[in-house]
Amino acid sequence: MPPKKKETDYVALSSAFMRIPKMKIDAARALMTLGLTQIYELEGRSPETLFSDLRKLKPGAPDDLLPFFRLAVYYAENQPPEPAMLELSVWRQ
Image (cartoon, rainbow, N blue to C red; front, side, top):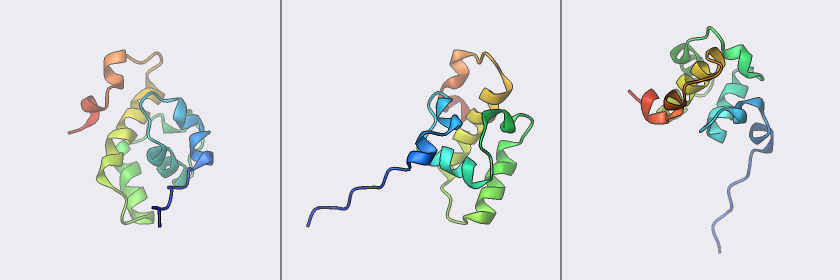
C-alpha cells in the first residue's frame, strides 16, 4: 500500500502570510490558528509571545515555527525589508 499523500492546506497557502518571503505553510497556518489573517496584524507583536500563545492552543507545536514568527513580525514592521534580513538563518537563535 503506497504511503498516504499529505493533504495540502489551501487556505493557509492562499493566506496573506504566504506573501512573506521564505514563509512556510505550517507557520502561516499557525498564525491563522492564533486568529490573525493579515500581515499588518503582526506589527508590534512579540514573536515569542505569539509562539507561547500557540503552544497553549497546540502543546505539540514544533519549535521550528519560532524563526518564521520572528521573520513575519520583522517583515510586517519593516517595509521595504532588508534582503539580508529575509534569510531564516538570521532568525534562528
